[in-house]
Amino acid sequence: MRFLLFLAALFPLCASAQPNFIIIFTDDQGYNDLSCFGSKTIKTPHLDQLAKEGRKFTNFMVPCPVCTPSRAGLLTGCYPKRIGMQQHVLFPASTRGMHPDEVTIADHLKAQGYATACIGKWHLGHYPECLPRAQGFDSYYGIPYSNDMNHPDNKGKPRVSRDASWKDQDKDVFNWRTPLIRNEEIIELPVDQRTITRRYTDEAIKFVTANKEKPFFLYLPHSMPHIPLFVPKDVRDPDPKNAYTCVIEHIDAEIGRLMDTVRKEGLADNTYVIFTTDNGPWLHFKNHGGSAKPLRDGKGTNFEGGQRVPCIMWAPGRIPANTTCAELASTIDLLPTIAQLADKPLSNNKKIDGMDISALLTKETKSPRNEFLYYTSRGDLAGIRAEPWKLLILGNQRKGQKNAKQTTHLFNLDKDVAEATNLAEKNPEKVAELTALMNKRDAEITKNARAAWNTTAKHPWPDTIQ
Ligand code: MG
Image 1 (tube, rainbow, N blue to C red):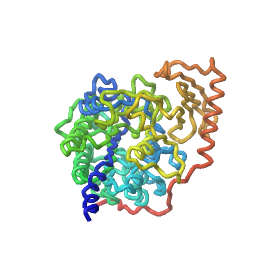
Image 2: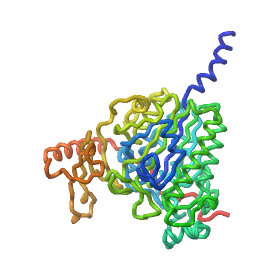
Image 3: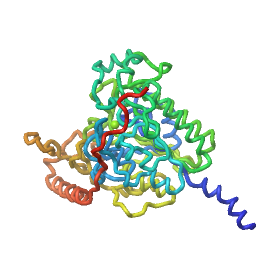
Image 4: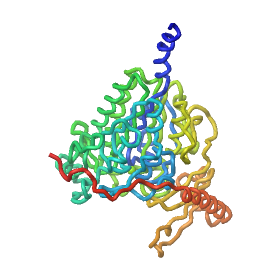
């Protein structure tokens, strides 16, 4: 009896020893768009504080330069092609999604007794069969796809310029018809995007507070700074030149509010916070898009500006403060890494591409990852990184683009992070070696690729709600 009492007393200690995980994932934020990553115009004191108390990752990649495939890779630890999710982004009329049989970070942690929540933009299929509650999350609150997509058929988008939208945001916000979802039901149509970042934070604070006694996993994919940009009235700078800055600074302030709760509830010494973004900045939108400087290009491209993203990892007492890791790593490494940090390694039932990079969080050591494949936003093989070398073969991968000119690029990223000097012509052997290597790696993925979920059924959501 005494032994049982001893065990009962010990159990809460064991349970609370399992660390909590919070992944904060912004949308289309550039490599340069935090003051701690070099921005001279955007002030992000709360994220800077996380960096000061944690570790910045400066060579951190996403597996695709657009939303849907990037998110599929983050949650499953796979190149999107391995799970059939490589073909660009989903739209309101899409009838496919991430297969619920895939093992997500949420599935893995839920099986270890974690409380799990997804709050924010999902974009991995909006039929009930592939929404978050079918993918390991206990609850979901957010928008099912991008904030520039209209329910039910993506038609009727406003034609005003982004600057005009910002100047008259109280009017333009209701020109969009993006739904807000609770679990599998529409609760607001159109969602009021002015307050969405703040409402995500309110939900996140509620979830953290309610689950402070048990281990939890919070996945918080903010729907901005993807356009159209909106903020609450009390923080809006009416000058459209400052629209993007205003949105990032608002997200930063809201992250500060969530972190206040984490600290106040005494969770700081047992919580990992990982901040990153799904792809590079949408440069086309100028002052409504960000900057990837000093990297080349942005969203939608395979240059570093499209796929290298800012990343901060924070866990006081576990991750050394005010440090930087320049080793190669990716969002696809987070699943096996989190599994390791939670002390429950993954089963080997499904092949994945992610690697356990937990040593990179705490030590000065080489990354287990020395290669990384690049795929276009349409899922075509585009290149490979191997140590400092990066090969990109662009231009004619798409069927039907017979006349597109193929260009071969070879960069040494250690010496030329801006990808300014193409070394391909001078190094034909390196080009041949890397071409063979990327084709070999891609052939294995193609051969073993698993199918995405899809259906011929009509979507159950009504076209309008009362
Ligand atoms: Mg995106």
